[in-house]
Image (cartoon, rainbow over all chains, first blue to last red; front, side, top):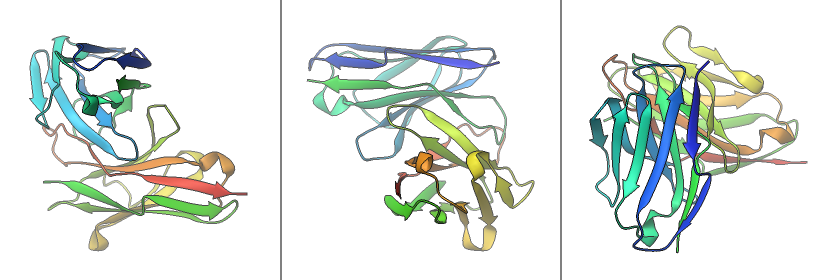
Length: 113
Length: 115
């Protein structure tokens, strides 16, 4: 069966520090991969998605970047965190093809102080 | 562009009462539609999905949703609320194309259950 791992679960980082969140998927190949951010009291904002290795689509201009160095690995990064980067970050995968549902990781609670 | 609108950021019902969470989509052609549930500090879990096979879709935990093209709606219902249903619920849309990759989520509805 397929599983998705996302870590760390919680993270407290000072303003101006770098960020690296990692997400890996097991049990499937060539998945679509996604990073969402959920701010307090708000819905899910799609940040990045990837349909293959090295292919990244950015949805919202921001202080973040994403990379997909391997088929089932998706990394969210920042060189210098801002206070506004605080939130709950969710990684998700879905199989290629129309109508497939997304499966989510457990999320990372990032607090920038 | 595809989008979904969830009416009501917070819904409160009594235990045993009907649950109705509203979702309207915007799309030129019928899209794929999903309902997810999120418990505090966790990821999202799929409740059900519409992929054009049947307009009434049954999901987990006694939830169901009906696709109404004429109303561009996909409302989520449950006949009798349980305390364990208290959570955040998200409606989501995906284009009806195999090459399409995005899933766009609504702003969510927080469901509270009164004893």
